[in-house]
Image (tube, rainbow, N blue to C red):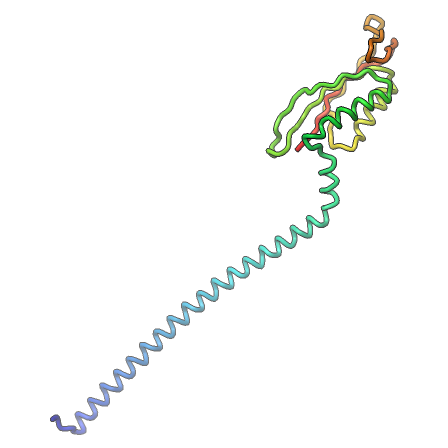
Length: 190
């Protein structure tokens, strides 16, 4: 057995103290690293929640803007023709021509997809002839139609004596000094 001298006791207590100190420092190092990791996780979580809060604010702003403009959006949607309402526009044009005692021809000039793939542009070629005031009233009626449409081109010509002023089965008689109007009307459908 080893004799426990004061020198040996000192070295043993020094060794034990160093082991305890090393264990304490190791535990402190582990705690500091764990604290660093948790603080980084907390910062990441805070950043994530701040980002979510910003997104929530943007969604709230968009919802407020939508609610503010809902009536305008509904009015615009009702003014744009759906594909099955094309016939209603043709009937509207025909009724406007008949109401103003005008001869009329309607044809589709061009159909093309717009930038938005759900919306199509349709260009109607509308030719009317009759009294000047009737043609002006017809144009005014078309411009104020309940649908969103755009008159792209209007050409007016005076009917002369050498142009047929007779009457066929579907037209009103033309007189000298009546006018012919050719309109290109752009309509949007979805």
